[in-house]
Amino acid sequence: MAGVLRVVLLLWVLQVSTRVSAQDSEYDHLLVRPRNINDQKDNCPINVYFAMDTSESVALREFPWGSLVEELKVFLQMFVERLQTTTLRAKRVQWAYGGLHFSDRVEVFSQVVTDAAVFLGRAQAIRYIGRGTFIDCALRNMTEQVRLAARGKPRLQYAVVLTDGHITGSPCGGVSQAAEAAKAAGIKIFVVATNEETMESELKQIVSSPVELYRKDYMAFPASNRQAAVIRITDTMIKETEFECQAPMCIQTEGAAGPKGYKGMKGDLGIEGPIGLHGLKGKTGTIGSPGCKGDAGMPVEWWSQRYRDSETLPIPAMERLIQWLPLHLPKHQRSTLIHGSFRLENLVFHPEKPEVVAVLDWGRSNLGDPLSDLTFSCMARCLPQDNPLLTGISDKGLEQLGIPSVEEVIGQYSSSMGLEEGVPDWQFYMAFHLFCLAASHQGESKNTIAGQTGSGKIAEQVADLAWDFATKEGFRIFNAKPSAPRAGTSPLKGQIAGLPELSCSSTIPSRSPGQRAPRATASARKCHPSLGWAGSPLVVDELKLIGGCRASTVT
Image 1: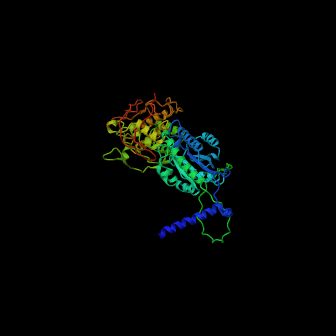
Image 2 (image 1 turned 45 degrees about the vertical axis):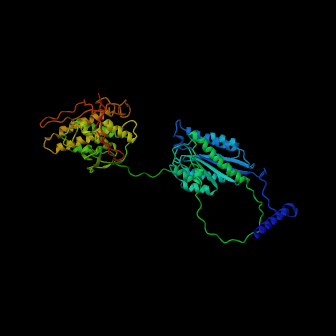
Image 3 (image 1 turned 90 degrees about the vertical axis):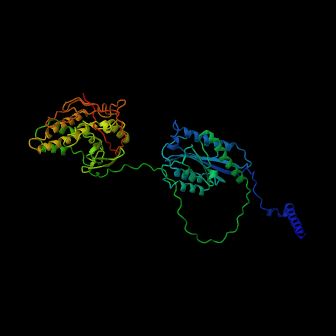
């Protein structure tokens, strides 16, 4: 009973106090009332900023190129139109829009404006950049643009980032750090995937929390997912906006100054600012000092002198080659580590699989053009097995041995090295290696009595074969033979560009003991064009391939 009396007494006191407050105008000036939420002069600004990915992973994903960027523009238009046409209970809401698009650089296509038509017109003028993707730089620029918006401090700040999450670089501190800086600036970030193929882990680093609200499964493309994403995100913005803009605000009066506070602790280093604008082009610098001495060229002079020192009887082909080789050195030579004696005999193969597991005999390794190794491995295809200095394989059943055809060798090498017009200077390198081999045979001949070993004859045959390759390079000084098309100038259907017939122009046949070595013939056998070979190519300085010697046939 006593409890009931206390409750009745409390209700009576509250009723009396309320009546006094409502009726007695004497105390009216002491009441603090909320602002009139319908006051048109006190607007409630809401900023929405868009960051659109127009890098190569987005713009060049669908054909025709840039079509996916056009789909993103449709998403922007649907999004803005829905915000503009939705009727809100809060009458003071004023939407404003701004945006940028990015790749490995950032382009602001619209500052923050309140005119939706102006913003959409600027968005339609976007042209994709189509290069790498630096999402962290886009987020930092977005934060700076929102911070500098000339509309005072907005009630709410939203950002909608449209990207697939594929990142090619992070020069602005990384995505996670840039996203945290945006959130610290009061920006609520939604992320919308540009398509179904996304890097979801990267997207979740960008969004505000909770991820289920600000990321979910929003997609701007295909069109079947676009409408749902627009509705869910705009509904979230509208609900938060109505709550914020209808919330009563008390009149703030300036109070008395408080006591001076203690000196605070030293703060942490600030966040790195956005990348500045490119400066003006500087003046042309002065001519620099001479560079370092380059690598040694091809040792044509050294081999010529070696031939002179061991010369017994003159070999006409060697005399022509001594003059021809220095005049036709390749104009574009690369310098890398080369083996110097790259051939089948120096390779160790896997016992069970068609793979090369080791390369032996690096005693002649030096710096030079990798084409030197490629062509050196082809000499064996032009020589017989009984050659005393370099064992040949021209008289072997190459198809049965599983040795790849030169079409496959040149094709794989050209594809791996990006040579669209075949291997350049092929004939020159073949002529040079055979010239060196002939000089070596001549040295062997001089070291014997009257050349009884037959090295002198072999030297002459090898020199003729080298001159065969030289004439195919287009040499006309000695008027020996008409020139063949230079490698890379006459590609034929079904063949390797630059090697019209891909066959040895001359080969040195094997001979039985006591038989006089015949001179090289001008005709050559046709090498099998479709040899099945499943071997793995050996990589030495980007790519060194095992193969047979080939040269264009000269009539």
